[in-house]
Length: 439
Ligand SMILES: Cc1ncc(COP(=O)(O)O)c(C=O)c1O
Image 1 (cartoon, rainbow, N blue to C red):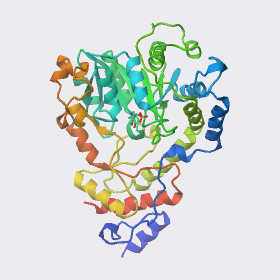
Image 2: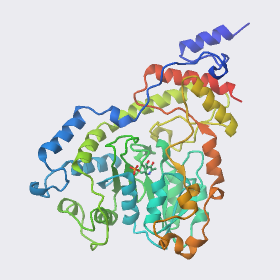
Image 3: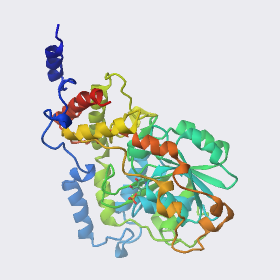
Image 4: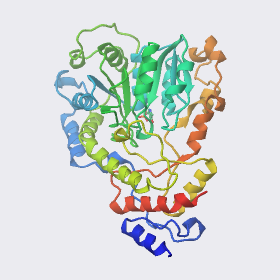
């Protein structure tokens, strides 16, 4: 009996295509001819709430968070945002700053790292994860990622030296890093753990928000992140000394009254620092966005879960590893391939079906960036690479062959909280049609 009509009828009923139909890349009819809903999440949720927050700042005529005649103790947007953010992220303190990069600089300085210290971070992350280490004068040391795209917990310990101070777990592409395996390594060697949750705002790990588990954490509010004010970042910690150092570093070494009042006692002297203060405009927009965070996540997670469910039965299919599937934000559904060539064919064929997929993005392979490989800083005497260890360390592709290989063998659709029911059905249909046919 020819099962094809039956399979096709079933496929149509669940909104999936027949895997035996001609691929669009070979001249067949594409799954879809109109673009899927795409774009940055946060701005699509902008409405009267953000407008009201901005208008409130305009009307107050105090865009500076500690603004003028209003008095230092006045309840203001950034302070309110910080309080709600700390609560949502399960931390004692939050500090709004001007970007995720600024947040990294604040966090590394809060941890008091500097010349002679080493920081272990994943070979695949954002430029500023490494740049902020270098700008503090410390030395970046790279570990491989695993198939979660996050730092491989088994590749950290052998990179620890007597100079290592910090391990950075970056929760990449919405996927929480496996902190149950990383934390014991940090504890065993007396190291601090920094969580970079820039790409995973709102994610959780085994029931706890990412960012609340390590010693200190950062988030980005740049336009492509879960919630956004265009630019912006937040540092969170539950440690009062780290918070005091973060406060001082972000505000030219000083402490303002409302923030000082949050500390059990003042423990540090002013020190040479910078200005990364968040403006009231940013604080207002972030406050409105934060109150929408869970609705945005709920929608994206639901859509991503449908795609996982809709293709899970395809013979041989495997996904990016997820240490806590319930905790990821659902940014994308990455499918694993045995070879780069099969992955490339999948990308090409899916594009032809009108359902584009991509390989992991939004980060870079750090050890092969020219400024790392060639150790380029604005001043030739920069302490990072003039120390003995700094002169000896070699970067480049040889640091992270596994990372480079993994990034070539995964691809998948970006998910969106505003994907329509039809969008999700078409994503499933295209994967079901293409995956079994690419060899
Ligand atoms: C993992 C990670 N950390 C830090 C940052 C820096 O954030 P920002 O762009 O807000 O400076 C980014 C930005 O993309 C990021 O992806």
